Image (cartoon, rainbow, N blue to C red):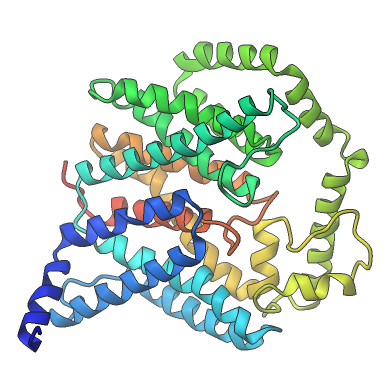
Length: 397
């Protein structure tokens, strides 16, 4: 049996930054399989381990950026547990929506990051995206190229999966453009193609629009890429014109599309509820219980607001909304300010963050992405933590 000293010595091994960094990377396979409950538990445990070892060093090396905002958000999240209709379920929502993101932010921003570590992390993300996209490609081939299918690989929700692949796609693109001397360039190109096909096969309109906007911003920054991107767009339109036009028609003629009308109803119901309790909100997962009180009949089955902004406003109120989204928009701001003081080797991360954050601002309109429904919630918080880390810390290159 281990004595007390032996246990402390074994635990202290994990307190080393490189080991904690590796533990953080282990979360990506869980993200790949959309293991959101296991992931939430994993990140919370990682946060507890980190705090225990920080306590051994009297918290000398612990830094929590925006600590006051985090304290207020954690307090507000606990308040919403008691404000919620279903107390037991609300504890689960608090863990996924507030506590696990806090642990991600705290642990990641305290890692002693290097460029090699970040590169390795995104390589794993690229492999994750390729693995999931190849499953979707296999399914579409096995179906006899039935493009009426909307594919989400092994994820439960194709809209959330589409956003995950879109983020990987943007970073993939930035790695190709800003790592021209990288020996892994062929890997990046193959990954980009495969991930793009996975993104296309989701047929998620909101994410398609977000991707187009992100690519438009990319072209404005790099006009020389307008020709290759234009050629790919033309080839894609020629090869899959029926699929693309059918999805586009549902946006243009939204009054005749049941799915779109259902989404509009969810937006309207959320707005009517928010208007009655704007400041405080109704607590976690309130839409399910309250939606029939404002609109009795829906065109399709809806269980949430179908909009990230409305969902956070509905559940957390305006106070919680400001606290929650302050991290996202600060991260976006930092990603634009970083360009002036960063070395060129870091540009692939900076521009990947910019494209992802801007595109997600658009995607938030169509679906809740800070949610308990998918692992995309954790991915967004990892990006937020990365932006803070690049802004506040000197990353070794």
